[in-house]
Image 1 (cartoon, rainbow over the protein chains, first blue to last red):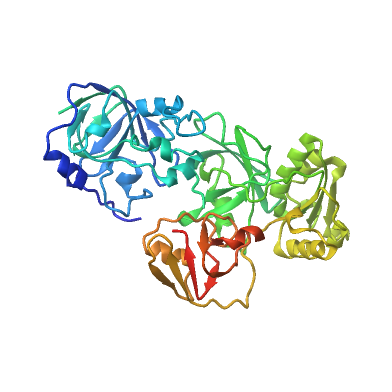
Image 2: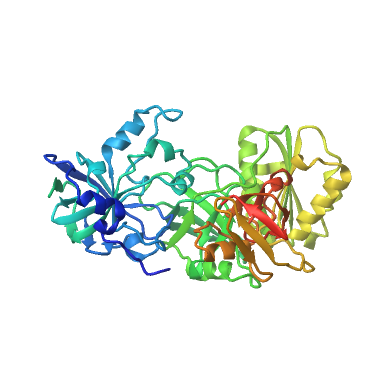
Length: 185
Length: 314
């Protein structure tokens, strides 16, 4: 087990560039649907009814907070990861038809921490936004990994390409719960 | 080379099948059903110090509410079974992986199963499946005595007259030559101490059984006291980087040190977690998991080595 090293979101090259240019999405209003954590690599994700987010560290009890994650030895932005429910809905409609058929990827299976609706994650690299009382910084787009395919025994790599979510750092910590509002800052 | 989900399961049953063998029944604390499995599958159970041990599932195959594993306390073992007997109690929590199957039933018209002692666990699951399908099978079960034969009552109930017991204290000793010559559509499965599986393999080969008709599972390292490891070079296919594997270290260890987060489990060459593709090299296969056909382009990083150099698909 190594000490977790997290990059502050805007230290990531992708975010740094984005912070210097106009853009991002405004005027949206989203909702936090689910919170999931796992205590170590490969462990089943567990759903929480509330979570304590610690600035600079992650979600209390999660593998990337504890330094027990698959990618923990590699410094990066991954205090908290988000994915859009809309992307999961699209997989279940086989949209676009990149694989054999519809794929059911439940919020427990995708291994991102927060499942959200109405949040344009791909536009939030280099942007700040608020989840309940917590402030997050979008660091880089998440990227699907072969490890997830193995773990699930499901070909999700291609279907999740470009909609695998957002890796964030925590600027201001606090308690979040499903149902919390998410809004741009 | 498959990563598998680890579940925190609850121990809902603990029963001594023999003075040495304890049967644990496990279920998910929140989910009504556990992942599907087929006869011959095993799971990894985490024991002390983040180590894992493999146990075959021996209950009813399929999608079930509960799993069962039988654990023999091995006084001379590596400590995993003793830890389980001492620590895992009713109501406790066990960290158990999703199942993996290196020992599946083959499509066949007849199945001959040979079990030695605790090696009966995957074969009991096979017998359950075969009995449910009305398939033609015989299960030979070798043990020191009926009292020390694990899961005997279950086997009798499942197999009926298809169970043939070989208990040493009754003067009945299994002769591997009994398996006889191969017949078309007949498959042979053996699991137990290495001396038993070696004897079955030797008898099968002498009688002319084809390799694909024989299936073995041994949860202990391949014994080869005369093997003298030599250093070799490991070339990474993706970057061309060359790593030296010293004589006293494994390819798995060297790759991990280089930063590869590789899955592994038994680190004895039996579970197949760390199997990796290779090319351009002569591999000294020392595992007991890969079938001969797979050895041309796959190697088990925890125990297998190479002559001089090999390129791995990493």
